[in-house]
Image (cartoon, rainbow, N blue to C red; front, side, top):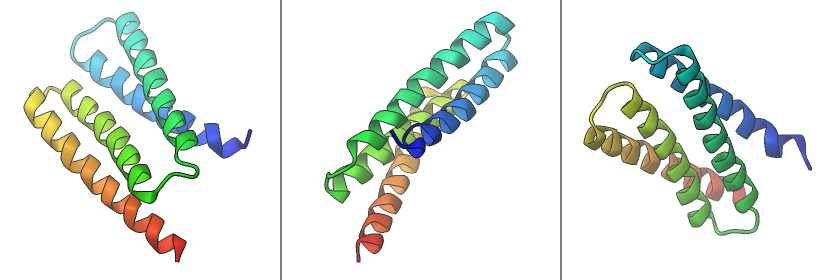
Length: 114
């Protein structure tokens, strides 16, 4: 197992989980509750990132871009929802950011393949 296959998902999970912990705590939850929710968020996001990274080998660039965009959009939309935004606004922003990440990943995959 290569170090990069688990290192980047771990780093992203720590940042997302830490920020989720911060947001939960700022909205009045107890430190124990905030820590538990931050840890669950980190684990779920880390597993999603790891699975996306392991899945993309040998797949078409379009599918890979869609998966990376979806994971990115879900993560940031969720954090925006935790910050107090409405579900509709969080979903729309997550969709927009996920689409832009998907397009960027698609562009990078095709430019790197040349």
